[in-house]
Length: 189
Length: 424
Image (cartoon, rainbow over the protein chains, first blue to last red):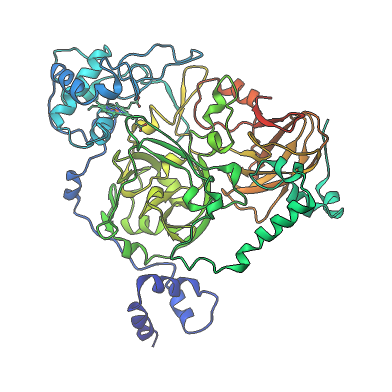
């Protein structure tokens, strides 16, 4: 009997159905019977083919997980930087309408601490992740893996954290230890 | 010095009504009292005031807008010169009443503009350390039991002008207005976590938005289990584009940056992703040179919205002090107000009901004697947390904290009735 009732409800638009199933808990009419299933809603998730995620911007973790295959050189990064980044971040990375990406004066305990990639950022993977997903703002997500490594090699070399003529790939980037690597107190966990 | 009237005494005297007229909202307070009007002029005004009774009014509208006379009540925008979609817009707290922020005035913080997300093509993906990677379309999400909650959302960077050496000379909303409160309706995330079967070793979820910064942050799975909502509706209607249409993560009490708008992906893992928005930004640098990271909860805070900076009091007399209080830890337990810069305090009335992780509207009657005064409010929550003085906050957290500023705010009233922001 109740199966029949539910079958009929299912034909209602989803919104109406949801309100019928879950907001009549105080009624003692036949619908109250439907309420007994309310604590375990019908599963609505469809299987996700995880292969399809790879075409999306992956999350890049500090241990290097998620880094794309590729290789880059600082000298190529310098050219890319002048073409696509200098406008907002300054021709020497000193900052303009957007943050400086090169340099920064310590210490972080100073009255007016300078929080930059060099002085403050704990992980180099954050740099490639940020550029890959959000820069340049007019066309984010379009830089190739080689271009991303070149830009990182350039910015890190200018910050004195990478040898200018050494090719950079996923292994090299993940191995870089940033100066402020241990500068954070985690409130969680 | 100015004195406080006990609110109950005050109400008994039946002065509540005259007070409401005297301290009318966001208008310059003086206007209500100081204008002298001749009898003739009053007669003219009266017939003008009745003009609408003598001609047909406007037709119906499909979607109502604020009165044309309220055009100045808007969000103030502060955006990057080269990237117009990077920046913030502020809720004009000084012009609003009650606890619900009008949807169109809810503050914004975008990293690269408001995306256009087609609901027909939208899917929420859950993957990583799960037994069953899943995707959900909107019709599917709408089949789950929904929950509605009034929740404030505050940007972690709200009020950061408080760290400046000199007090910011702007209306309260223009430097404390990265906080708003809405009724959010959505699917408790718990249902979906169960369905996907989260690996017991997965302690973090990486949430990503569909915006042009593909904004991503790490969120403890424990918070998702506790009270996270996948919000579909805001104040009764589907989300506005700038507030995450079609789907926004709501994490009651937590800093806004975690409450990812245009949410389309949750990856479950055993480590945080260490994105820019949880390393270079939204971390609090301490005087020691070390920085606090993953400090999620917005502390207890209150502000007097009227009288506040930029408003002008009229003649001495009784005014209603009005303000907002909230705490990310739970409910506001008490709000006190002071008219002498914190030397003496009096308990304010809170309009009910008081809800957890929601705005509370407080009120207190104040008799201004025409002499200089410094108005302050301080909030206490039901977990015993008390809003600190600015001096205490600076002593503990130094000058470079930048995020999670929740110190007591002071407004100085001069003898001419002007009100300005001071550090006291």
